[in-house]
Image 1 (cartoon, one colour):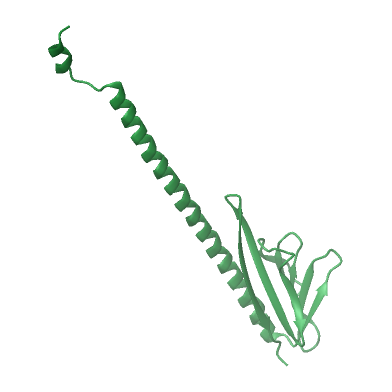
Image 2 (cartoon, rainbow, N blue to C red):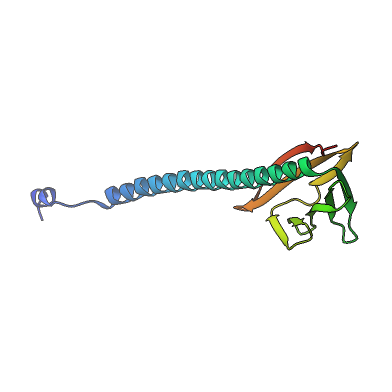
Length: 162
């Protein structure tokens, strides 16, 4: 074969093909890393927003019930859970809130069926505490997402009606 016939052939050399594969591989790797990082941040934000909405609903419910209570008692239950009991003027329970050891925040209104308001509580850090006649309520929520713990913390003080 002469030189002229080799130069006139159209095609891609092995070096050009390998260079193209390396460039495409780097671009795909970069795109994948950016996509996964942004996806994790997106999921993190959704989880935090969901926890914030749950915590806000719980705080509003507890605060509203506190306005109707005349007395609030805090009880450490035999199973290790903690309950806040809101009593009316006749010392009859209006509502009982319980922080369960399984991470559930439960509500029992007027002795009726129990309702779980959240199952994402950290039972060790969440608590009820009486301060005089008021109730200090600390709520710590957590969720595991992408092998990371995401947390949210809030607290409020509830004053019963006198």
